[in-house]
Image 1 (cartoon, rainbow, N blue to C red):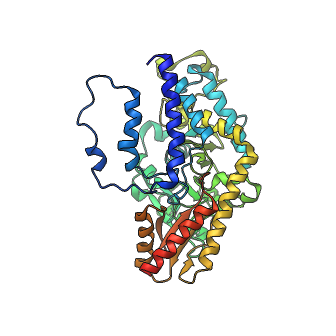
Image 2 (image 1 turned 30 degrees about the horizontal axis):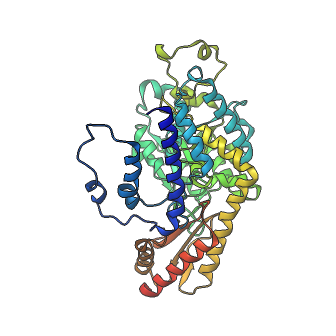
Length: 472
């Protein structure tokens, strides 16, 4: 592809994205295809001869779009938002165009140093402790997802607790214990599996039936019991915004228990942590200054294209001690000087993209004031949903609203609740997800797209009311 052709097709690709966004309001939110429908539209083998890029763009419309669930749709309320704002997309495009590998400082100094500065900016914007800054004992790094961040935190915790033996001889005969509430993300169990501890190493702690937050007394009792049985606590995970209901664990109280047991404290604020750009939405992070590590995902609610998961540690020595390895082909004077950070030591992967550009673009083009406005709009819309639930006797709240997440149900029962939700989803009008809370089914409505308006929320609510009339 010549430079002129690249320029022409680049404009065409941007035009396609803009047209796609413009068309979303009229498209069904959830994909309306059966298993195998998309596959049958594709040839069995790759083309022998080159095809023009125009053909690829044409097949986006013919093959791909009908088989998409549209995460950028203004009435996508399932799971959590996965924003792709214009600034972030352009930042990601620039990263792809530069195509640099940033595994060590020497391979592209700007990749490392821009990331350090951007994460320092972001840590300050969230009100995180100074120890998490790059000029302190810790620092931040952009991971792909919070799942990788949790795995990395566990490896760091094992390194510290084992005095470095875990990376040399494995987990050995020590019976390690990892703790999280019954509402903790499934990535905690997966981290234990990947670290060689096994699923049974994770002890789930009961939650308050009303708030769904971890019962701190139960955590303390579990750790005392485990130590008495010869087991060794290694990490506690606190959830600041659980996936199911947005539950907020008491970080400060959990930190005290973790410290008593000599365990690493990892704070998972994957979805809700970004809300701390607003000073009035920082209460759920109270106590984070005692955490050993912290993760939140700008690629959810903060307008930054996936993947961009920001992860900080209080003491980078445990992190790099667990993961640092220096083969001869990576040796260089800058690394050996000790004056630079080599991010290959901060996560399981060696190769790494220039992810910081898209977050840099978002922070600069929206400004902190624009980001606060976006977060506040999501919270306001969620409060509006809670008011709609309260105004209709057929519905009831299951938990209190958590920032931009609302969890509610039909009073008629589980079957009717799930049937009404599925009717809305199947219609393509909106897309919602569900959970169970204290054994009962509930609908989750998570606001957060930059394209969602009050009219989109009201339109979705009318669809739910009609479904409730049909299934209630």
